Image (cartoon, rainbow, N blue to C red; front, side, top):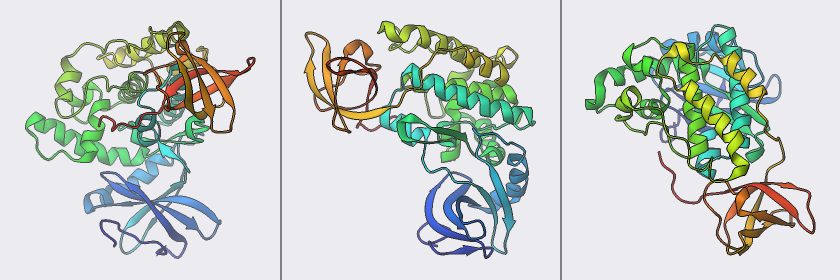
Length: 365
């Protein structure tokens, strides 16, 4: 073991899976990219970090294997060795929503948020149809590929979430006086439904819907709907629904879709689980949303005319793109700002819409 890593590069697991690199870890497990020497493909190899997690790893594998959908990471194998059990999943070459989107953009425009909600709703609907509840949906459990184009969006850790639930519930039962909340708990609380707090171990399908609403609110606003830290427990139970993200009504171009998304979010964040839409309802509602799926590009704000409310972007592929401030969602760019945008035909320059500034400041937890 190097540092806190259970495995090192080159380790061979069960004479089949060769460790290629360490990917990351959560409260329950460490994740490695490994080579499946039999099928010649890269896979995600997950290993529990402690004996408590080991006890539930097989059950977790059985649970997650029930779900088969393009927006859910596929469980490929489960093995047990003398040292530990292992869960093998398809490897998604990308980042999670927290690291790759929220920490990069800070705020996400309604078009991209609608696409994310649509894909996640389909994945959750498939899992609920199979009788599987995630219990721990949060940005770090959503993987995507294709950079800001999000060509693939997949939910991970369906099985592992059941193990995390016990740790989360124990912390909740300890209340705000608890001093032993782990990273798992602190990361889960902002997306936890009220019934998981008041009725310990009573997570149901509506709990997953609440988590979807909480994540979508964070994307649109850049803020968690009820804050973060242990005080979020009281906020979730007592506070009214979060206010509409201010950027939705700032620009006419974002109002229609933004308000539709906010309405869906409020339904998902209804404190009574009976009143929340089902995942199938969400899929249907998302299919009625009008959002473009246009390639996202990166560039640098190279020219600004604040008096006339327009500017130019030098795209990374060498083109000059015109934009108007009315197409900016979130904070306005300054000269030299890195931006993410879609481009549409125009003369003499293509037109950028929407435009979102890539932030460099340290994000909120």
